[in-house]
Length: 275
Image (cartoon, rainbow, N blue to C red; front, side, top):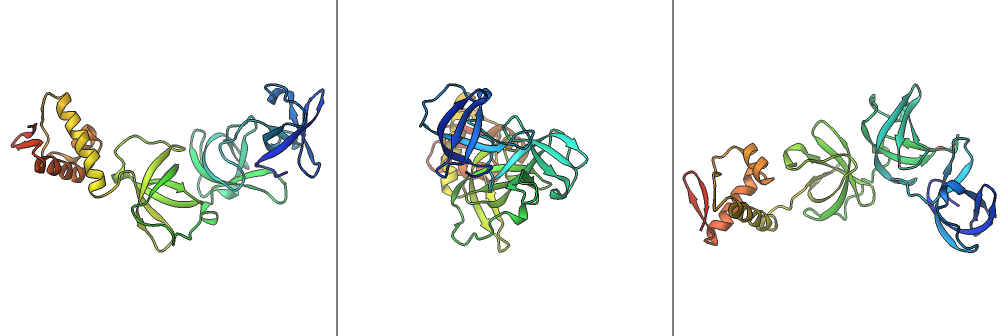
């Protein structure tokens, strides 16, 4: 039975306070009535998360936390105490982020990227925001332009710190973000650059012709909706292009070039027209 993880446990016996679950070695843990939506048959195998209640007793729940021990996640600060921060991880009892495990002050409502572990002294599930100790820096088998599923951990000065795969980490820079994002969000991203220090630069849209085709299609749809003409061209303001099309000016120009070569649009002085 592993603390802070989802375990395969057997429904062993009922008691007034709930259902006792056991592992293969006979260790048991209580699944309280309040966390038991319906009574299973004894002998049934259940996937239960094991943690400690407010009195530090081992307890089980069928609910799933945002992250388990050994994982990295973006969690929100719900309360501040002199010794640390209490974070929401999807369970009734919040998880503690000690002040010694953060680099700067946080406030209620902030999102912070943390690694969950079991503190060896207190035997409590604890969070650490000192992620450099827990990220995987062995990126040799990754390839530039690969698509990955990334989780946004926290907003930083230059962009969003993200994690993906086997605890790899990287950054999506502000100048590559064209749609609203928020911490905790999972996004499809693409590896732009692998750095010698084990960090990875990511973008939200593929580079090259793979990106041009969907962008070109998006422009065509905008043209149709606008009656066949859009007042955008190669001298248009980049921010106006981002606001209208959700893409960079460089991508917009490539997409327009593709449509022009396919004889789908005419480029005029004041904009682009559907042919």
